[in-house]
Image 1 (cartoon, rainbow, N blue to C red):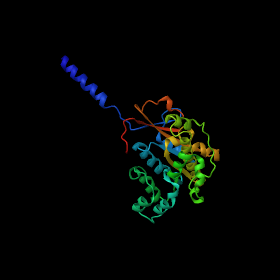
Image 2: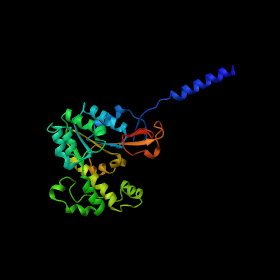
Image 3: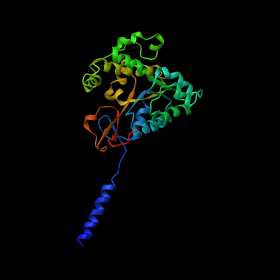
Length: 284
């Protein structure tokens, strides 16, 4: 009898352990309260700009970006844009969207990220299929490298055409913004004052091209690394410097051991915070 009771107990315990749900993500607001995907979409649809932050190698956020894009397109006219494309590649992207070059041509002529096919191609192809503009918002990487090596002054060596692919100089810069201070500290001072400046020129350029291409009747949906808009800094800060009345919604992603419990240190990181398991498979 005791063996039977023990066996039943083991079965019940095993069933309890392995029948627990394994959510791929949970969605929270800035205060750490759970919210629905529907609520997020409704809030986004009432804004002017959405900064959809991501971890570049996280499949859940890439899936949510595509789902949100498709759903927002049902209720708003969209303009899309992304950090993953540099401004001097805009003509090539336009040619691909217009069907003037094929995927091989895009891959040959544009500087695509290694994870383009798995993570960003679905977004670009959605824009192509639905006649939506897709804006390359980032500064050419080599220009950011110039800033890292020689500060903002190094950009003065660029030609007029080259300068058209970045935010107009001089850019406003606040070295005391917590994000830039934290970046410098995390690197142990390596890169000196120029490391956060290289980040700032990217943030400023993305904000510049978002506003430049922001049709007042459209929702501009922008995809970027979450560190470019976390804590309402980065791109968000530069957008607000130019247009304080613009309605901006930010999204961030964080990894936690448990997605059902929101870690307090992640509060106010963004308007919507996607919490994913630390064990989530990476795309690269």
